Length: 352
Image (cartoon, rainbow, N blue to C red):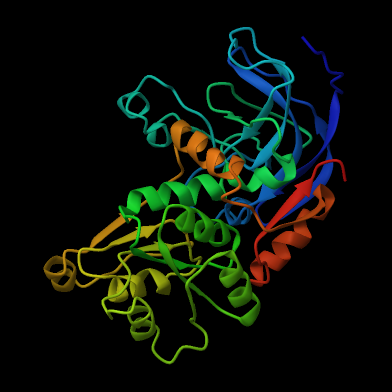
């Protein structure tokens, strides 16, 4: 078995108070009996990480906190109870850091709904550090041959949108609208949808995002900022005027969630994935009933969803448009995120 030299200190981005991160040295954690220690090489930056820093959600978080939940690296140590993950394995840290594995949700493959779930970069320290711990049962198994920088965003963005598409019930040949298609999640949702045989209506704003969405495989692009009648334009995009069979809402504002129920096809489904702070869902009861619309939430994928999402990536059906910056530059990424200037995904290199 390969052995690795593990330092006692490491560089990390630490949220010490709401609204800011500090780049500093902290101790390297020690894995518990059922945990592994991963030398994190790269970590994707998700909008959830910004929510965690700003304390946007009605969910208790750890403070001080190391954020991040798209960490890809190498297992360098393991606890005494771990036998199915070896030192030297390539592994990923996901939003779901661990669960009890014994409750009714865990036993049915709904471990993200476990009442004792631990969340990377929220209730436990995450991947914006050079070494991080995670429950061995839940780490993503990353096959050889995948670039750790390229695969990092799949560990949340990819798994999340793939799960949402499965939850939508959309079938090959049908239409799906993706709201927020030009962002990190959206850019991957377009590709997963195309690989699953779906026609994509990409909804976002700006010419740069139009070019990106079309290049990734969207059949139609609707610019919500320039559209005179967004609802009519989306419904017309399917050719028959009935609207998309499903809508994935990845937006970080409330309004797109309300609009989606207006243009989704009768008997269609609106799948809510984005988590804007303090937002609510609103839809006319009469219209929802007589058109038999389904409105549902989709959280992160389970362990099987993770393996399936990674398989799409391994077969070259999905790639992640990303830019790499040093971990020390994380706050610059957050600033661009706040201004809505990010196209695709940013990945931080923990060595810089």
